[in-house]
Length: 502
Ligand code: BES
Ligand code: ZN
Ligand code: ZN
Image (cartoon, rainbow, N blue to C red; front, side, top):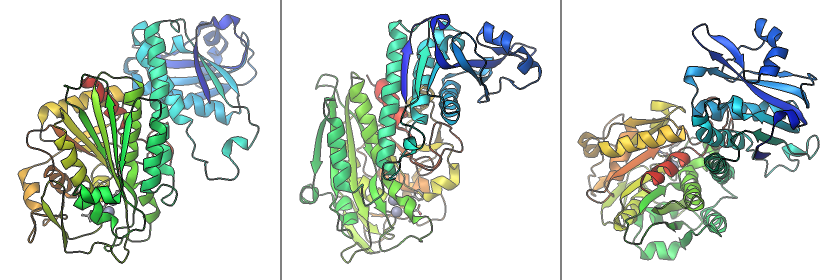
């Protein structure tokens, strides 16, 4: 799909289709179509309730031949009073889907009808660019016959036509939306690649390739270096696999060196079989997604660099497979993390916290302003929040407020979860400092968070995001996400968080 912003009179434009918007306005909840000429043409359809203005409703009127446009697509925005950037993101995805399924190759969007209030134009331009670009993502890399080859190869082109298109703030916002969604789609691609084609080595290479020309410095540690650096958790988890682990470090310098960095950490488990505590086979194939936290941190770092944010940021991705090979760690094995704390591996399937322990210890050594981690950490998170919200854990109220603010900006849903001394008590070890599973029943996500907390330096603001429920397969809720594939969850919020420190 090609998406471009243009300043042009709709009267002077000729195109296969025109996209206008319908919305519900005023006390009487009447239906309003954004372009008066089209509204007149479609008054019958409104009277017959074929167009109701409902959010995400899309009605295509073929061969209307209005102005220079053959077809008219009407997309609903819902109640005018409720219209925000998230509605716009979803409406844009709806526009993309409707045009695509109608086989339309070129369309013009009446953007002024969307951002009727000029004040909203930049935010809505960004959201529109994001929604359409995110919706256009397909993972057909590994199919011999690509989806787009079905009919013909002409791509869909969408012209976003706006009288404000020449304004710097609108242009900038639109381009930011394109770029950000491009980074999300890249992270989704990393996540969707199967375990055999997205090993720790390949993931590190992809991060290095993608960083070229962005100003990001990428350093990759191999197994020998990981061992030398005393990363006992990451090394231990990798022992059952023939694939070497990697520790990926992405550094971005957008502020003076004296300014402490913000550090993002992502779980990069390229395949989680459970190890010796092996998982049931049903659904195990989904564990290729166990590196989505890492993929999304890589994508967030790319976006931060491309936006040239005035902040110092570091992305850390410990990456390995978790396999039941002859050298695999066994239940009861004890190892030491980088900060010297020891843990019993009482269940080899609780491996995410082990590889994150080293990354969080390393992050703390950087004396950061804050640390944020993202991980598909616990099945319990899926039970608690399903695929609607990403649960986050922090004891820091100011940081929690900052996170809610960032998520409001990004449009992603987050929900603060409890983290208390009781959870910490539950992960005390019998023969080592810690146990990687809880001694109590329930609250599996909180006890996992309490385990991670043990590796965060005293006083460093830190929050952990468990994306187990939101990392993939959220398309039944969000129309700009694939039904089954990786979502890119929390990437956009991480970029907003980085902005908040700039
Ligand atoms: N990667 C899984 C968590 C997961 C499960 C994410 C399902 C998404 C969907 C993680 O490594 C894991 O297996 N956690 C265990 C921990 C338990 C053994 C304490 C879990 O949640 O069952
Ligand atoms: Zn596991
Ligand atoms: Zn895992």
